[in-house]
Image 1 (cartoon, rainbow, N blue to C red):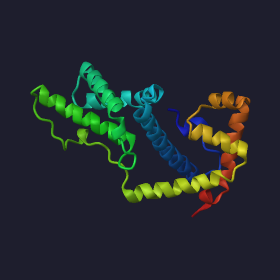
Image 2 (image 1 turned 120 degrees about the vertical axis):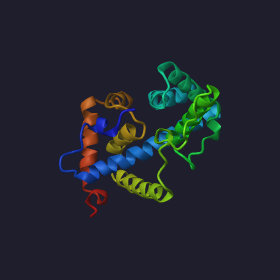
Image 3 (image 1 turned 135 degrees about the vertical axis):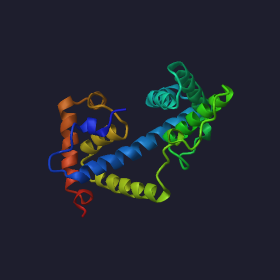
Length: 212
């Protein structure tokens, strides 16, 4: 997936550190929401396009995770296959209220790797080994703080002119590239870039960016 910093090229001059903060807030929430929707599509209708996107997002990370735990390349491929089969078959067990997609998937990968060690009669893995510890999701308070700031950013976005707001939503919420936005809206590529930069110039003047 293309990051927002890649979408914008850079934060507009003078936007200050809060501009980057806003991008991080939007990106974190947008990624989590999008991945939750993808999992819902897999669970409800075995949506192959949604599964393909989840696979593309996590396959390299799962292989790296398995390699760090001592698997060779062949074994890491097998772990990857087992994890993605589990994602396909058990998608309905994913609960976005309890964990992010990343935490859910890496927990599956961790458990499968431990099971493999046991089946191969290899020395037991220490489940508390730092390499096996799945990065926890933010605490309830941290998630609430992110949600509050995301809500504030969305309120700021609502103040933008419709065309600029549309460009921002396509870039950040739907994760489209500048070229894809150009094709979707039927406007020149330069116009897309201009709308995105103008939108952040306007947001820079909002309360979100001028708060102490």
